[in-house]
Amino acid sequence: MTPARQGPTEMDQNRPTPARIYDYMLGGDNHFPADRQAAEQILAAVPEVKDAAWANRGFHQRAAVWIAKHGVRQFIDIGSGLPTVGNTHDVVHGVSADSRVVYVDNDPMVRLHSDSLLEGQSGTAVILGDLRDPETILADRDLRALIDFGAPVGLLMTGVMMFVADGSNPWRLVARYLAELAPGSYLSLSHLTGDHKPPRAAAGFRAVFDTATEHLYLRSRAEVERFFDGLELVPPYAGAEPGLSYAGVWGAEDPVAADTDGSRWLYCGVARRP
Image (cartoon, rainbow, N blue to C red; front, side, top):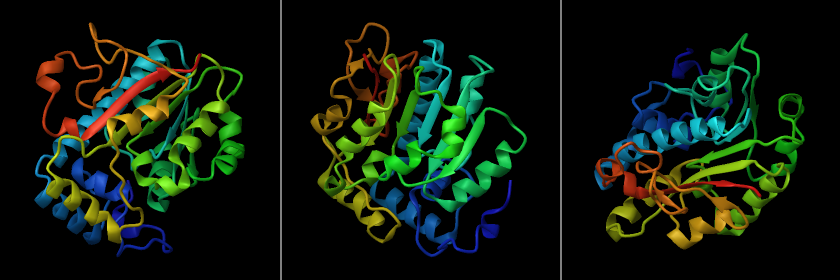
């Protein structure tokens, strides 16, 4: 993969981005000094944040596999981030080799590295786009070439809606994407929360993104549940009632062991469109 220092010339290397901060937390090498500095500031305020990042990544992978095992063969991964171990196409191809995946992100570095990784691979595409512009994304030629909106789709929105301000109505944005999808489609979504967290830690977490390309918005359980309005939430693990859970718990073999302090920074859920 191309080293971070060889990113697109139009890329602002002096402002941290969510994708590159996340890459640092997951142990990747596709980031710049500004991203590392921002990540270390978050770690100073929230020492368990790397655990939160891995819990979020694990949820993403388990949810994608679960959706694939329920017969879905096409996925739109919005806010996909930089390629890392166990990308969406990797895990869903483990269920069905004919699965199709479209990645969407607004970070030019994501497009650069994803194009390199996916070169020569059929059934995948990468779109540079802003999720706050659903009309442009949904009309994209590459997306339309791979996604059949007459059949169920897995819409993956892992840790991305927390970068959309209330003023942009994130709930309406999610509803717009869902409106395009056929019945039997699934939404998988995770979101940072400050519920039951020390206010000082939550404030420190948010403050780091004040100088980043995107600001951060922590939301309550009730606010995260609104993203699933009109959908049928599935149980997060065997024996549980349908609903949200913490990221590490969803789909875990041992939900008790997976219920860590880091995991509790994120609510998540998977729901079916009836």
